[in-house]
Amino acid sequence: MTAEQLKITPLNALHRELGAKMVPFAGYDMPVQYPLGVMKEHLQVRNAAGLFDVSHMGQIRLRGENIAQALEALMPQDVVGLAVDRQRYGLLTNEQGGIRDDLMFANCGDSFMLVVNAACKDQDYAWLRQNLPESISMEMLSDQGLLALQGPAARQVMTRLAPEAANMVFMDTRSCTVGGIDCWLSCSGYTGEDGFEISVAGADAEQLARLVLAQDEVEFIGLGARDSLRLEAGLCLYGHDMDESTSPVTANLLWAISKVRRPGQARAGNYPGAEVITQEIAAGTIEKRVLLDVEGRAPVREGVEIVSAEGAILGRVCSGGFGPSIGRPLVMAYVSTAALAQGDALFASVRGKLLPLTVRTAPFVEQRYYRG
Image (cartoon, rainbow, N blue to C red; front, side, top):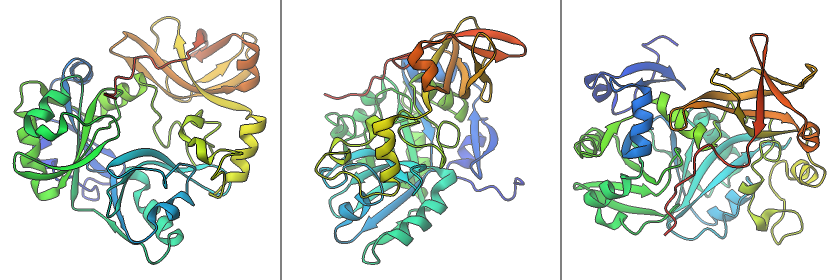
């Protein structure tokens, strides 16, 4: 896309005023980093607090009767049992058991709020409109901004600006005012840290951002650090670590399928691809997404092959980078389940060299969501 074709968020002028390096991302002109630099931005979030502009994400409001039942027919999560002012991670699946998109969905009492990926939001909206009853109204909140305040100091900052945020725990949602600005808060994020996502009218987004940035603990953070933060926390990025050809079982996201929706439970199945996913839960899949430690400091990037000592291809890297918090490379990959079960030695094939890999059973950094 040309620069003229890129969409902009309500904070575009502020990003440029503050010296951000702007890049095309999901059809938007977005900040990849600020003068602070990616490494320092990353550590700022781990040690204090960072503010992200995520207004490119899709925010969809649903209103009408029996929304929970209708949504539950489209994804393998417990929507019916979601309490008011609570949010949950969800997956929209296709008939082949693949992941159409991942999203957050919240029960707001008189409506449901969905936050979907920027690159998928238009097709998600069209697919939902096609598959939800006509009695349910849908609105893409195109004029709404979305900010994310993340880090160990995020709660302190948000409580200073909106005292009602103090007792919110992970996945709580709440309407409130921040500095006199009407906002909708969710206690969630994409960094592994405690924090909040703040939905705000686009016209008020810059005023809100300036207010938050005026707090001593906060710096603006770009897409570069957002990617290394989520990878350290072991979080998937749609379009890289999963897509329409990847099932939740293959993507190692079985935890996201609510217990009540699993085989043999009260509301099992009855969503797109349920038969395929049920079979995979029982029989397994030929490969699985895993996190891997790398011996040495050489970067292992997306697309690198995972091989055996003899050179047989056993998988591929879906996300790779460097973890500033841990000072070494990060790898997320799809690997043969047979090789994993047998404990085969794994190597990353990088420019003719075989770099030893070790499978991890936990994220690279501890997830520090506040659960009360």
